Image (cartoon, rainbow, N blue to C red; front, top):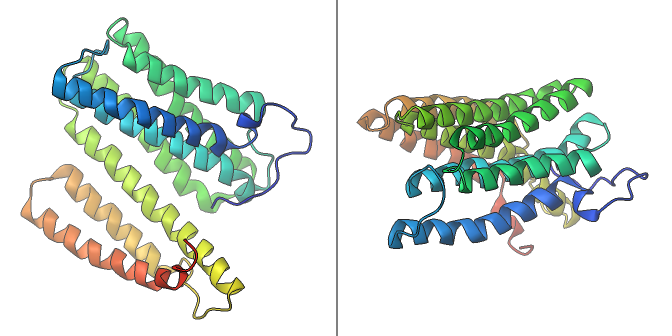
Length: 269
């Protein structure tokens, strides 16, 4: 989870690249603030964007792989030092990764000029994030967080698949659902650690009990069920049975939220 461990003492560069979240969370926020109005203008008023994607597809791709991609990178590069005990990715290395993300956004916004080159530039970012994450987790022998690395790697693969299908004129719907499913799974997994941990820390300071239930077998069962239901949705999104499975999954996650006792933290917004 994200904590406030100090940066390496030797770092004296630009503060934007002192932490993973600084560059990528700021970049994601600014990007969304500009990209969403631009997409609405294209979709509603027909404003032309020099991209080779239709307005709908451009919006979907950039919100998944542009916005969410930056948020995932910001979280990983902030949290990994606390998982692995290794020095954080900062300075030039972090700056190059951020530049690669920014290049992908520019490339996709102007992909009509050079579609293949834009696609290659775009997919390189998540591939790089995945490679750095695997290196840090393996080098730090932090094997319990390998599922997060796997999820990011799979998200990178969906981007490659998306670009390939778009470039060859094929339907991308199943890839879009796969990417949404991976993001939902990441939220369920990371949220199950971060939310009860932060709530529990505050409740301890206020001497409030009982504390949130820590990540346990129930969470693991819920996550396995999440994977199963999401796979069902990816494969058969319009099936009535898929809807019933989602209803059951909603009950499981509602109980997860109840176990975290979030209502006891309302005094601390």
